[in-house]
Length: 464
Figure 1 (cartoon, rainbow, N blue to C red):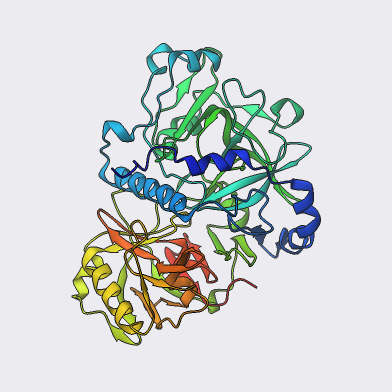
Figure 2: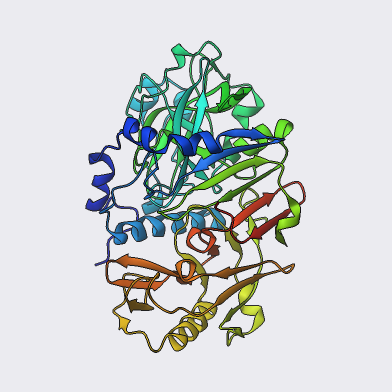
């Protein structure tokens, strides 16, 4: 019987057993931070790290089996499906706030003390990380970057119930002169229901309590707060975020999550009055460096596809896949099949999901183009595998084309993913309820999310 994607695989215990020495990493990679963390014109530039990258301040173990990544990826896919369907099976509901836990958070109203949490997007081993400063004086924290989540949160002292192990010290609100809790009557507290997909709770001292849960049953519960957020020497006061007091699950060594979805409580929207409604990134490979840039960008370097409006979830980024080619030839599938499912572009999904008919045609075309390469057995959900590594095999030119003329011309490393030392597989799988453009295909491209202009752009050679 296959393991449930909502259960904790034994391999994930490594996430909590292996520490990443912050001091050693800082010494080896300090120049990278200095080069990236700055304000350039009206855009903020931050270093972005692959979860397995040598300079990642919260790297996952290098010997973590790829099967663990796939299991976690499946949980993320399931959480997207649940969000879009707006219906959840009992097995996918994360642990509710119990009366005991709620009492520890200053006794919220009993009517909200056992509200079941609605899973949002799963994250952890497939997500990229950066650093964020918080408080006065500012201290730096390692944060997972997620385009599929809205509320930014991090672990806070005194960790009244539980905190997972993280790189560096836990944020202490008492040490920040600019920290303030947020009352239950504020619009920010009311807005938590759309930002976290869960209702807010309220303490007896009128402090708003947030509840954020994820597809793999990880969750964070704590106080909605505001403080000064900073990146390098640049700071913004009155930033609303979650100060986590009960944080359990697969968060790796990060302090918390940085939300970049389309919601008033996301980091993007809160910084927009200063920097504008756009951000861009280049997702690096495990051996390169990337960036996250919030604010203005060079519009001339990109080809664009319109964001597609959807009533399914207005916080996610939807686009329209219009076609694919292998070795310059269109796939043998009707053009209408590409839009048979809604398509999301996401920074945290590793394996791209395609409508089943499109995936089947892609698999057949790639296998035909690589008929001179020895086939390998299927690996979990990846059924088109070859002997060798992506950097060594001869892979065909594959293009993913989007409405409006934008395209991703995939290299072998964007097309294939190495699952072990002797096997590489097509980094795509069939979708059930939504197609998702994952981060393997986005690696090394500069991708801009221009929310104001309602478009997403792609440019090759983004990681420099």
